Image 1 (tube, rainbow, N blue to C red):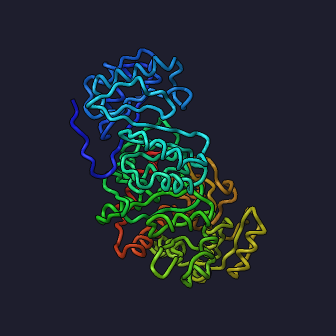
Image 2 (tube, one colour):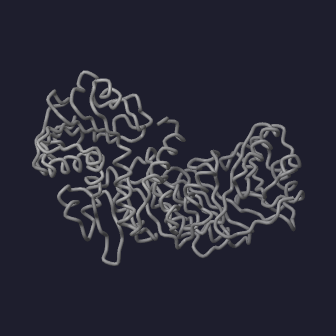
Image 3 (cartoon, rainbow, N blue to C red):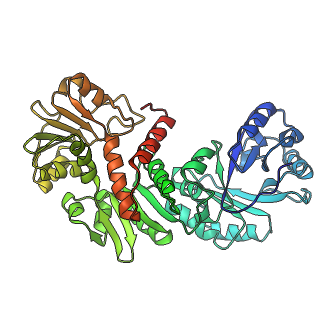
Length: 487
């Protein structure tokens, strides 16, 4: 029989599902990294409650979710409640029962805590606070509220509704709600659910190793990458590895949003200390900053923010990070003809840095009007798309070739004819453009070097501590390998 849960920081609960009992038990026993396991019995065809509980090594939550609450159990309600009652009689540590269910037939168990749960798969109900109060009035062991986040601000709504209740789990489902899973302490949750049984769930190892959910608290410093989409971003893996290596009480999370207003609301409500900024927010958040560096102002984009008593400060480390691999190789750009592909924030930073170092720069993009605007603002030239021959350095500042569309390139093979090709895409590390350039005899530089260089500068700006380049690179490559792209 497993021992009691020692409730220090938030725990990790791995959800397991299966069609057959043998597979469910096998999945249960494979969840060796979790603190407790949720046994989803609603999909099991040869259901045996005693068999599901027998031989367990960690505490379990027994759940038999009906179809009407997003589960797979399609039988009658008396039959389903008998399953939960048997789990209570057999001493399951937790039994999950829906708030909308008739629970009067369930027995009281000395060894079992009841989880009263409520799920909304459409969004966040307007009357969420009153629902929470009604559930709190039932004096259940634990309250679980799961809503579907349409925007990141829905996480704040959920947090406010549950404020003051000390025995709950708050879950915002979907990609906009991952903050509730990655930093459960911010939401007062007893644990975070892991696995792949619900939208937005992450693997146990990711919650434990990357986001260190057992060690974070509501008072831990919060850092983030802001923008959309963020599924390809290695920044959380890199920065969390650096923060752990430095021994700092902090966590770095992806916050997927394209709204500067939403960022402002999050910063007011959460202990957000600093952020990396990516598309499409680099220019919008620059305009929101109270204090901006000369470099960020000249580039016209901020890729890094920090919140201080003086207000919001904006900086741009894209340019310095961009130049670092060139400097490391001793590649002089003064007087060289450089072509920058793209019309976004990364293109602005690359063009600004190259011009500042004396290169003759041309911006080339499919969006000719946007390319012209950047060129005019930075006092560089524009070029035709695709660029013709004659360049010394070609920089890809577009997202073309980024995972998962790894078989794409911004240029065909016959358009790659220059001395140096620098692809700012880092996932995968060796892009189709780089392979084409290498085949054409060009020297190549991948985007991972730039990412590491700017990440080190960001970490120091936020914390005053130097991040290890080795730690950052290892974390980035492990992340890239984990999502299926081989370095």
